[in-house]
Image (cartoon, rainbow, N blue to C red; front, top):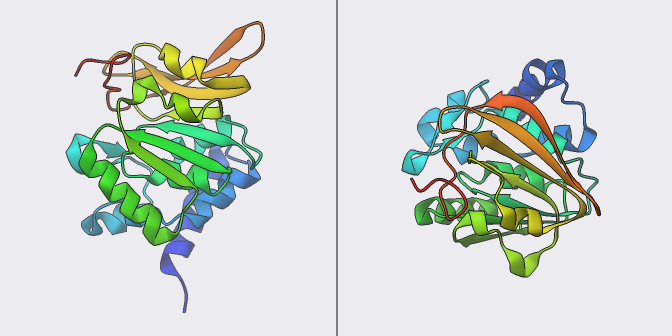
Length: 215
C-alpha cells in the first residue's frame, strides 16, 4: 500500500526545500522520515506539509517545513551530537533533530504542549528525546555542555545561560529581534571568541522567560 504522506513529504522536499538550498543529506533524510502531520490537529492533516506555519495549542505555532530544515541544516550536525532545544512546542523540531543526533534535550514552559509532545515521542518510538517543563531561557545545565542549541522562539538577545552551556566549537541558532520580526542568528562558540552571523528574516512566537520577554 502506498504511504500517501511519504509521497507528500517527498513533494515537500522537491518543491520547498531543495530549491531553497537545503541539501544536507542528514537533514533531508530526517525531513523525509518524520511524519509532520501527526504533530498538528487531525483537522489540519491536509495542510501539514504546506509551505507555511500552522497554529497549535496554547497560541503557539509549528514552523513551516523550510524553516525547520533551515535551522537544522545550519547546526551542521554529523550524527553524534547532544542537542538542546528551547521551546518544544508541537515536538516536530525535536523529532527532526532526533533522527540525526545522538540525544535531544528539549525544554517547554507550557505543560499541555509538553504532555502532548511526550505522547508523540513515545508513539513514534523517538526514545532519544528527553523533555522537561521549565523556563527555557535558563537552558538545562545539568546535561550540558551541548554540541548544538536551537531556540524555536524569538527573543531580544541570545540568553547568556545558553551560550554558557554550549560546548567549544558548538553552534546555536535563534531568532533575535523585536516581538514582530526577527533575524535568525547563528552563533559559533570558539575558545577565544563568539562569532555571530545574521541569516534569514523570520517571525516566531515570543521567547518567554527570565532571559527573554516577560510576556
